[in-house]
Amino acid sequence: MNLSDLKFMYEGKAKKLYEYDEDKTLIYYKDDVTANNGEMKDNMKGKGNINKKFSVYFFKMLEEKGIETHFVEDVDENSFIAEKVDIIPLEVIVRNYAAGSFCRRYGVEKGMKLEFPLVEFSLKDDTLGDPMISKDAALAIKLTDEKTINYLKDQALKINKILNNYFLEKNIILVDYKLEFGIKNGKIILADEISPDTCRFWDSKTKESLDKDVYRESKGNLVDTYSSLTRRLGL
Ligand code: UDP
Image 1 (cartoon, protein in one colour):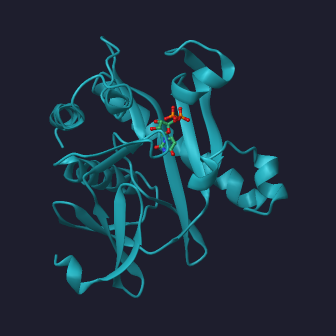
Image 2: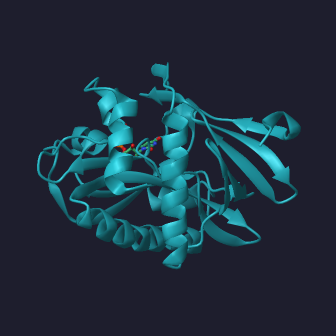
Image 3: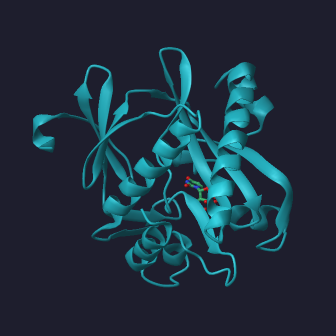
């Protein structure tokens, strides 16, 4: 696909969006990697391809299990075609184990298995650092309505069951991850990406990180880590 033939729409930290047609967009996964709200920034050849591959694989899998997603068609190394959606400005965070900001917030030990899968919301706003937001606060500031926010939680829990079953078989712990949803013709569908940039994965035995924490915490080479995860999952 020649990107220069398409109308550029938007550039984020890890992706670029182009207009594919009236109701479809082409998502290009960049090799850029950022962490700590842009404080750390690098370019790593091959990263975009891996994240695209991951997202395509999991969007297809979730579709087969009845979860509607924005995925339409795989295109090339770094891009796929997706439905154009209006992104709901909430990051839906699903946690199975304590890690990252959750440990800092509540003083709990990293790796604690939570009593039940926890769904949290953050306001999607880089300038504010994506602050956590309660359901009531999201409703009070008219970000969304109650029906939508309840649906987001239900979908996140359904997705979590599917993903947990999958990773359990691979001897990988799905620690936590971020989902984003969008609205298309009044319907809420899963959008954005599912990749080692947006999920935490640990090896069940060694508890070694297989995700972006390798970069955040300078624990090794990010592309090598992502590539071996890709091979391990057979993607
Ligand atoms: N996450 C993400 N984008 C964000 C915030 C979080 O993809 O803007 C993912 C992150 O990779 C992790 C999960 O959501 O898998 C929970 O992140 P957390 O709130 O612990 O924040 P972090 O420790 O990554 O700052």
